[in-house]
Image (cartoon, rainbow over all chains, first blue to last red; front, side):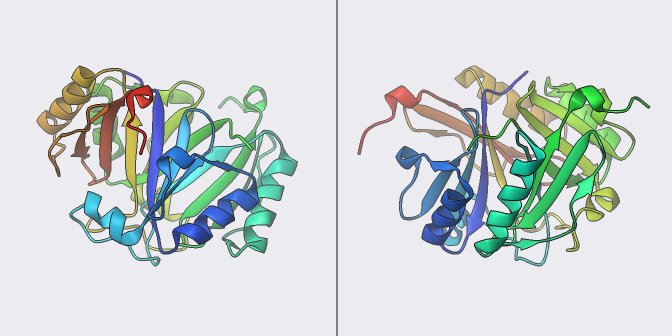
Length: 135
Length: 136
């Protein structure tokens, strides 16, 4: 079994601000799947994040929306270089996000992270699998 | 800007049971990234992975308490290759301990069904043909 694409759906307070945030970081928006209640951020041609206005998000679940003081998910995305990792996190922080821990350098993998405007956790990584130590 | 791959990280109570659940659904496990605290489910090789981390281990990556399953922070929608595959996955999930939280929805160009997994994480399984999406 395999999937052909994934849409990670996350609730947000302000769709327009969220759209500006992710655009500044450098991602494009799929306008076909976006409107005043939802912004579809294109991570690549198989992975998307749908940021849904909280009230709209709630129509898809019978459980209450998680408040910012808990974590149900941390999304990790791999980019092309260490420089890109830091650039994404720095740009995010300049635009209202905050860093949630120091960058970690495992040698074969470098990782930095931020909480976005709504407190969703993002890990930005660069990995060179050929350098991963075998146990 | 484009990413290379995505790893969705979710907390679970029992890594072994979670492994059995996703294996039953037909997914393979990346053993290189799996151990007794975590399993890495391959959703689309080289592109899309889900890491299920034992709650205590997940907790080490965040300074906030992990959600207990009574709230929703994320809905994960995954596209598969046919309507039959959508229903087969949901049916299998329910048979092995998952639960349904909504009815299937048929938009014509897209068909969607959903299940909550053993830990209450919500999955929307869909098959869509974007070329058939009605223009507004």
